[in-house]
Image 1 (cartoon, rainbow, N blue to C red):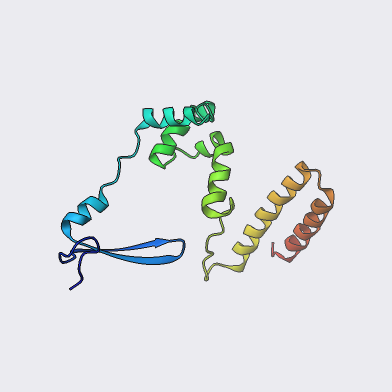
Image 2 (cartoon, rainbow, N blue to C red):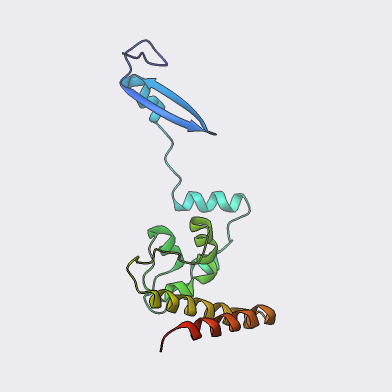
Length: 164
C-alpha cells in the first residue's frame, strides 16, 4: 500500500499529472487530497470583466458579442456560453468569429468527412465538380485568373468523363 506523499497515512487517492510531457504520480491520503484538490472558484462574469478591463482588454469584441441572428435570436455571447448555434443562418451571421474558431479547433474550415465506400463513382465525381466550381468562383473573385483557367479546364475534363 502506498503512503501519502505529504504525511505518513495510507494513500487513498492516486493522481497522475502531466506537465510538459512529464508524468508525475501523486499519492495522497483523504485529508491531504481534500487540501490538494481545493482550488479557487473560477471568477464570475463580473469579476472576469473587471479583470479584462484591468488588463486593457475590457471592450474587445463587445460589439460582436452582441451580434444577434435575425432568424433565431441567439447572440454570439450566448453561443459562446452554450457551445451550440441556434440555426443554420448563424454560420453566416457569426462568420467572422467562427472561421478562426473552426480553424483553431479543426485546423480547417472545410469538412472532409468520409465518403461511403459503396457509393457510386458518379456521386464522388459530382462532389468533385461542386467543389471545383466553388473553387473557380473563389478564384474569379480573387482575380486569380490563372488558377481559374486551370479549374475551368479541369471542370470541362471531368464533365466530359461523366455519362449523360
